[in-house]
Structure formats: structure tokens, C-alpha cells
Image 1 (spheres, rainbow, N blue to C red):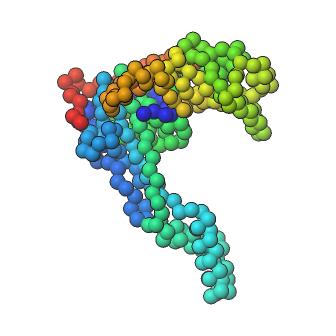
Image 2: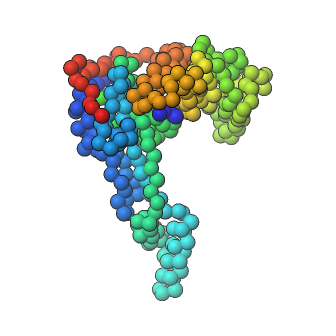
Image 3: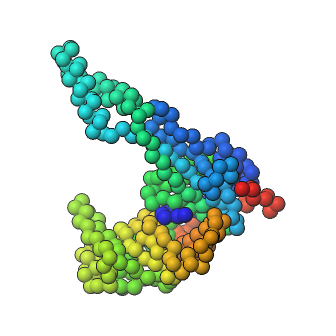
Length: 314
């Protein structure tokens, strides 16, 4: 369900009812790109079933799914067509278009070719954990996640304020210490992948893949000033992932011991329960390993929906 994850703190929110959220999502439901539209985004049923709810509540965890469709014309096709157009204009007028006019011709070409472009869809899960006051976006890119969070804030309203989760220790500093000590923090083991980068204009980079990290060579790179930007880890022999310098989790994978316990016929509800049941404590332990959450001026406040607010039926 979550291959990547970026975590946001809910600073404050007067949480609406599920029925209210469903109504708001319905007004922003996904629609495919029009003939000359380059991008479209909206919400779809997390279960993947038509006419199901657009927000699912499983054991107090709210699950949403954003669909983004993009259409792009290959750059080589645009360049080829543009050159032909420029040659044609030059032959007819004796002058080759440049600057603004050349740009206008390029835009006309893209606009004309878009109806024949193949659309590409991407799906991003969003998990709202009211109990822990967190929003987890299934993306590794901060830019992509921030765009989704902006969409969420506009959609959910009710005074919601979100900000990226921050810790007392930066991930880069903590990863440096773990690699230098050749040992992960309590509950975590270091795996066989990492990236070290020099924080200067040269950006000299060293990558290890399928290679033990418990060697003096890694510590030597860190002693020379390189900082870890990615580090593969495993939590309690249950979930493997790659931690990045931006506190993103990439390549998240539930290990066999977790999957086998779920059974072969686990459905959507079980999938959500297992995923949230593993990732919630993983995130808590990781934050603790990074020195705890960065002090805030005021504690986060979330007023949960009324207790009699029933989950929406599938």
C-alpha cells in the first residue's frame, strides 16, 4: 500500500465527520484529462471498487487515494515538428521566427498533438492517523508530497494546519553516527545500501549497493566530510526501508514474517490494518531514534469527530 512515505504533523484541526469528508472528496473526484489538457488530478475510491467510499475508516485510520493523470508529447516529436514549421515560415517570408514567435509555434504544436498523446496515471495513498495526529503521504519527493498536502488543506478545511515532521537530530547526522559506529539504533539494523555525498559544490558521491556497510571504509568517507543522504534499514526484522536525509521513507517493504501472518486471502481492510499497524510504531521508533520530535511552540491539537460518527459503508 505504501512504497514510500513522507510524514506531516497535524498542528491543529477540528476534524470533520467522515460524511463531510466524503462530500468534499466527491466534489473533487478524479476526471480524466480532456483532449488538450496536460494534467488532471482528483480522488478515487481507495478500495479500487466503483461506487465505494472515497474515504475509508479502518480502526480509526482514514485512507484516501489521489489519482494524477498526465499527458506529454515526446520532446523529439515537438522539436522535429517545430523545425519543419520554422523552415516553412522562413521559406515563405524569408525570415526565420525566433524568440516569442518561435515559442508560440511550439505551444501550438504541443496543443495540436496533445489529443493523440497517451495518458499516464499515478496513484498516491494518503493516510490520516487521528490518534497520532499525523498525515502520511505515499510519496518520496517532498515537492510532490507538499503539492498533495496543499490540496488536502484546501479540501479538508476546518482549520487544518500541517507541517513536515521534524526531529531533534537531522537524519544525516544520525545516519553518520550509526554508520560510524557500524550499528543501528535500538530496534533497527543497517542493511546493504547507502549513499554518501560531499556537501560542497563538487557533490562527490559514493554509493554502496548490496554491500556490507560494517567496514572502516564507510566511516572513513564520513570522517572526510561526506554525509549520508540515503541508508537502507530494517525495523524489528519486520519492515525494510530506505531512510533519506529529508526524513522520507523509500522502498518500504513488509517482510515475510508480516505477510505470512496475514494469510493469502487478506482483503483491503486487513491490508490497511496490517500496514498501519506496522508503520505507526516504526515511525514512532524512528522519531525516537532521531532524538524525538523537534520542540514545538504549542502542542498539536486535533478535535476528533463525534464518537457516534459511523464509518461510511463500502
